[in-house]
Length: 271
Length: 225
Image 1 (cartoon, rainbow over the protein chains, first blue to last red):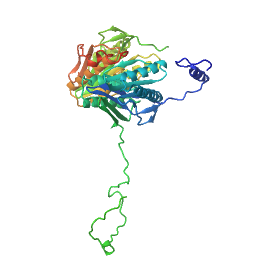
Image 2: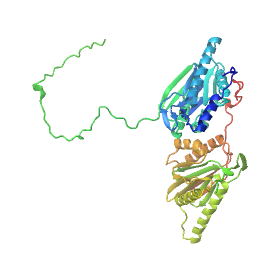
Image 3: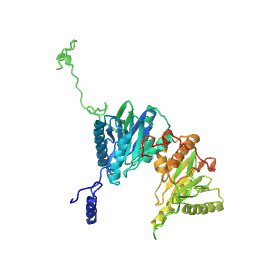
Image 4: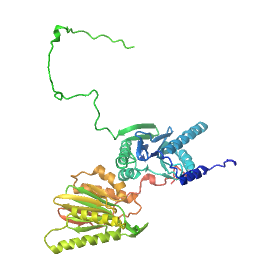
């Protein structure tokens, strides 16, 4: 570029994409996370939940990906939309917050993460396709925000995003109460994610949970396995007796060749 | 002939079977785009003593379909041999009607739910505007597919009692009202069982908007809402 970039987004590459599209060149597909993500505020903190399926078009790209991203020791963020966008934008904000923690010497606040995310996403006018459920606990208490790709945010007691969001929201609307206990909250979020996994094609595999309270974080990776194999091959194969026809039988008395003596087991050298 | 657009529409239609019959439920709104224009539109109508029809989509097409079914029922009545259309027959007839209209590029813009009880068995079937049809133990159209179906899949059992089925239906209606823009808090429920067809008077559901954290959401986050 000849003149210095003042900031904001340079749309030159978008013009190049349009030029290619006009010439008939196909865009490569994105790896999207057709997804169910959800979050809920309970009495002592926040529970975040996510499924683990990542899709590229109609194919499942990753059967067990991690959609709950670390932002700060007390803040985690679920991401739906384009996988590259959610991973990079959450990674970027996590780095910025870590530097900020060193500069200020205090715990990060959830609104700081929210402000950094929404500022970045708004600058890119929705082209960074990241729909996030941001949750954490700081000195002001538990917080839960949704951040949309265009940069708007909502502050809510319960929230869902992704292709399975309506399925999960139905479960929340039917089951949410103020001041739930930790077990009730975990059960409801797991139920909501399960609803997304079972009823939405873009969501699948397993359920991840992350419970954040002022005392710490519990990251339950693969809290529930929902796509168990109905048949597991047994190794070595066990054949039922009688399944092999016996053609000939010879019985040897081995006591003529072998002596059986009772004895003490030897100490084994394990070094 | 160009494909038309729907003008006055109904939103989700819900249906579940239980041990002794079938329940259909919906709200009573005829929306004109985003305007809530007709707030007392019966979207579930009786076809005969063993069958009801519920519709979402273009409501004038629903009224036309009811007229077709009335003509069939009138023929049966004039025959005076005690026979009436079975629910599966109504479903099959509607499939053919809708599929044939779709083939002429002039669809009846509806998603229909046929509910009935015949020969001791509950019947529940659906037909879409392009002729897609199937039967199932619980059904929904439109938004109901995303909001109500997951709850139905969790809680439905073939041997549910009428009370359990009614409770599940009310929960689904409430969630659809919360999360569907084109809906109102005024519902009708139809029941088809061995005793015949009952369509309830319109009723409203208790809704809860007073969660603590809904109040002042920006308390801890200036600039959020």
